[in-house]
Each structure stands twice: as C-alpha cells, then as structure tokens.
Image (cartoon, rainbow over all chains, first blue to last red; front, top):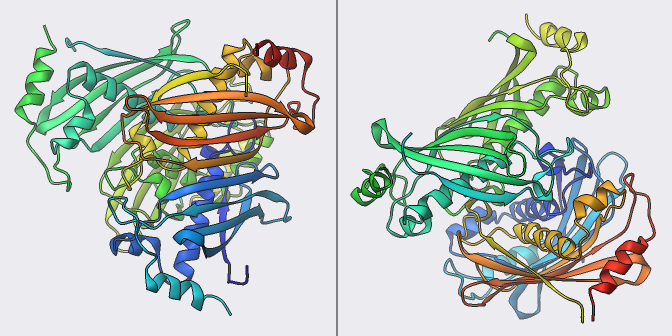
Length: 137
Length: 137
Length: 137
Length: 137
C-alpha cells in the first residue's frame, strides 16, 4: 500500500461498551466507517457528496481481527488506506490502536461495490479513480 | 386508555448491555420501537406498509423513566398502547417489565407527527383513525 | 442555569442514520452521553475516574424533543449544562444544533442517581458538589 | 460440519436500517450474536450461565459476506453451527437469509477465545467440550 492514509481520532463511548467492560464487537465496523468517511474527505470526495452524485458504495465483505481491549473514554487512533481491487471493488484497510500508548485494538478491511441508488452495479467513476491515484506519490 | 394493547417479547442482547452490567439507556428507545411495530401490526397497519403508502411517523418527543435493571438474556415483556392526541399527533405509551417476575424495567412514551416522505406535515389518514377506533370497544 | 456549559462537536455517522434519511431517534441519547462525558471532563471529573472511585451515575429519566433533521456527515454542536437537583439527583440539560447554520436538532435532559458499583444509592460526594459549584461564577 | 444447528428468527428493526434503505453493516454482528446465544441455549449451556461460571468467550476474529438486502420488518432466519478449532478456539458459522423466500442476506463466522473474567486465557472447560460433542451424532 503506497497511498496516503487518513487518521481519525475518537473516544470510546459508554454506549459502545458491553458488560465485558470493553467495546462491543460490532462497534469496530462503526469505527471502520469513521475511518472511511475521513479517508474520502481527505481525498476531496466526501461520501455524502458521492451519494448525491448517485454513486453508492455498499459493503460486500468485512473482516476484523480483535487485538486488544479498549475501555470507555479511551482515545483511539483509526488509520485508513484504500485501493481499487479486481472486479471494480474498493477496499479499505483500517487499523485501530490506543492513541496514548499505541497498543493495538483491532484491524481489518471492508470491500465495497459501486452501485447506483437502486443497488445496480456501476463502473467506478473516473473522478474516483483519479482521486485515488492522485493520492499516491 | 381504553384501547387494546400489544405485547412484545424480547431478550436483552449482549450488544445492548454496557459496562454497568445492565442495558445501555438508549436501547429502551429501540425496544419502544419494537412495541410500536407490533402494535401497528396488531391493528393491521404494519408500519412498513404505511411508509409504502406515503405516511411517515417521525418522532417528535420521547420520555423514559428507568425503573430497574435488566441483564443480558433476560426476557422482557413490552406492552404498548396508542392514541391520537391533539394537533394530529400519535402517542404510544410503552411499559417494559421482566417476563419472569414482572419487575419493572422502563416505561414512557413517544409522540409522532404525520408527514409525507419528504417530511411535510400530513393529516392523519382516515384509515389510520378508523383502525385506531376499531381497536377500542 | 448560571453554570458553565461544555460544547462537543460531532459528525453524524452513517450507522446513526435510518431509512428515513435522518438520524435514528435513539442516537440522541448517545449524543447526550457525549455531552455529559465532555461536561464532566471540563470540570475535571472525568466519568471514567468517577467509576474508578466507586461513584456511578445510572440514568433514571430522559426526555427528548426532536426539533429537526440531520443527515450523515452533518456536523453537530452539543451544548451541555448540569445541576444538582432535589433528592440527590444530577440533571444534565443538553441541546443539539447544526454547527454550520445553527438550526436546532434536539434538546432534552437526563436525570441520574448516585450509586455505588452494585447499584445501591450513594450520597453525592463532596468533591462532585464542589466541582459543580466551582463551575459557577 | 456434522453437528446440529440452531435456528433463530428475527425481524429487522427500524433502528437497524440506514439511509441506504437496507440494514446497516454492523448489525450483522449483532444478529450473529443472537445466533450464538440461541446455539448455546440449544446445547443447554446458556452463555449467561457460562459467564456466571467464570468462562468468557471474547471474540478474536469475525468475517462477513454481505449477500443481499433486507428491509425494515423483514423476517430473517439465522442458522448457527459451532465447532472447537485449533488452539482452543470456538468458531461459530452463521448464515442469515430471508424467512419468506430464502434469499441470502449474509453469512460468515466469528472465532472466540476462552478466558476468565479478567481476560486471561482459559482451557476450554470439559463440560463445554462434552456439550459440543453430545451435540453431534
């Protein structure tokens, strides 16, 4: 992965904990979303604008490795990269660690198709390919 | 409140707990929604169909009293009633208790406006008023 | 309310939207929590530390007025104040509006008891009363 | 996989939808949890009791393939199997489809470690191994 990466900071909300005292497992996918949102904003293609232009990125696959605990109010650093992959897919790789002492929390990826608003497949738009390529150096 | 009431059974999900060991406070609003869904199904007006007919019920007010704890996997009973109120509002009153021993968990209400799909105010449709009235006896 | 207020900035997550295209109603209680967290940090009593000291603030009542829509990625401003009320309760008043153009989104309050870790009532600790009073001027 | 499978029925909650009009991606992990809960109840080892006996099953890996849309109030069937795997891991395989017409919604797995309440590794207890084996025939 040679492209740039975005960095998102967030704090674990109480609503994101569970009775084991760490974050509930599904919250990681919500934090991955925060990473994707900030990555796309960084390359000047905010996802809200993409949907307004009729391009949707429904998720088709997700993988998560849980690597450590995090408690309420812990500050986390979410690092995100993205790449076009085969078959017109967009893949985001995300890594989450503690902001304070760098201990790993979770990492994984999500794979997204390109569709229009009704869910029909769509070619990756040129402006998105360009933005992803501009992003590399 | 003389109308019928719907009863919904659900179990507390692990995802709904928090580090205090009971359910997280916002989950009650999600359980209230389960109650509304079942109430409207009971009077033969499933909310999914209402939205298909162009009638939306956005929430405009919510009130919750938290009355007791509930733990993961506890079975809860959600009792729901509904009534049209002044100014073309629909109010649902919901009470949640433990299925096993009847101890109270939460109670409260939500108030809903009638709108079309774009959020513009809408008169309460006759078929909804009729269904709510048929419901009483 | 003469005390200071904390201000929290957050963006609506995609996970917080629903099929009506605005935020789902229960998310407001999660944003209220973000407000409480930042308020307590502002007066140098982070809630995570309070729990470590054995003081818990379980919610006993919540009220929300929904005042406007907010979409994915909209930036919101959450303003929070707090006051001790009768019967050893702590009440937080929270107001949420659009950061960009100030349109209202939601407002309301939550009321909290003081308990120990097992849920038994607890007097409001002196250091909390002092911190709340220091906060006024 | 020769063991028995549990079947869980659930309806998509409005709170689980997002502005794309289908369920939000992280909800699948919450539905996987519903599947695990019912599987463990089926083999007479309710997870709530396992935690009371000091055995925790923190998640260490998750994988999801998203295979189709599901809308508010759609009824889903969640099918769950489980197997002990290498290195003292417990793996649950879960498949979610529409109850009415059997169209696929999602499938995947979660992998869990065995720990005590403080997160320290724990051997899989004999009674759990026995229960999983009894489950096969």
